[in-house]
Length: 535
Image (spheres, rainbow, N blue to C red):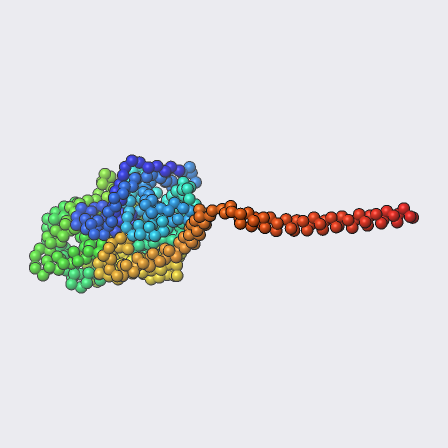
């Protein structure tokens, strides 16, 4: 086991769903207004710096052979750490993107309330935590939910050994896919943590995920949904007329085949809704329809401004690139492996009222998986096994808070009701309330979001109560010890004399009784001697 810090500081600036997972857009969508607005409006910029630190993690937790290792990146924030026994530690779980900074946001509120340390661990096979920097299919067999959960457990065990304190309860926090991990961790390793927050946690892998588009349509409303259908139809008409190269060039996406292209178009619209900015999508698109301008150009201009020019050009949607362009694999190959092997989330066109092209169907997703990874994956079997193991949208865990948002299309893959007294759920029903918004520390939260955060605070306080009460008791004892001053006055000496007399009195009584018994024995023995001599 190795823990090490390197002299590379990263500004603790960004709160992310699942530690730079899906709340901030993926890497290919961070070049435009969406990313800039999220950073500007929803995220606390910290002045502190936190070093990248490294943990020697086991590559395979389930092998009987001598384990191999890789370096896993993590960060530590001790800003509010009480450094006492029983103070909690918040484990912020990394997700399907690099963790290039220390996550900040609502976890800082929790850390301050409970004098907690925050530790953020990057997910294996993302960012700088990729074993051997190798995303080959052969190496990706070590990328699984089970290995990731075992990473968390092993990290907690080893990190705890280096602490000066003891009995520190751990809380797991994550959003989206890491939100699912935070819930699954409570099931797989119930004794490693005492509670978890599953923010927009996608605990229900869905193979045929038509509900995603259905929720997007519901969130944007009829007029905007109709405009998006018209835009999709306009692109279909252009490609059918032989002008596919020209319309793809509007995005710099000439390399994409038709299904990949239409998947990218659907993602552009859906992400605007997912991240709580449907107004920025619907306003200009509805206006373009009413003005009878070129819908293909209007939507391309929106996409490039919203996400940057790399959105359509990159490897993320390109099946061919994900299969063979090794240098660009970090742009999306790891997450594609996870989708194809265990969670699917295949967003397909609904049979009625679809926003995306019908060409984006289940067969498209299956063929993409097999073309990229061959027979190393079986997405259908992977989804079935995951649901059987963790329970889908009815996980059998304890002390897990499930938080969701009204506009978020991913809510269809999450818990949708309170499951038990210790598995509460709350949906923040508010306009522009998007994916993992409860992990933000925004000052302009609408009332439902504020209430949601208050519920989270209440439940975390309740679940931590056995430890926090002990901390308070220890503090009172320590305070009493510090404030105690011995009294050496005459009165104190007199009191000590009284106490000494009370202690000596029973001892004196015992001594007198012993002497009396000895006297009786001597008299009796003397009598016996006299009688014997007379005989």
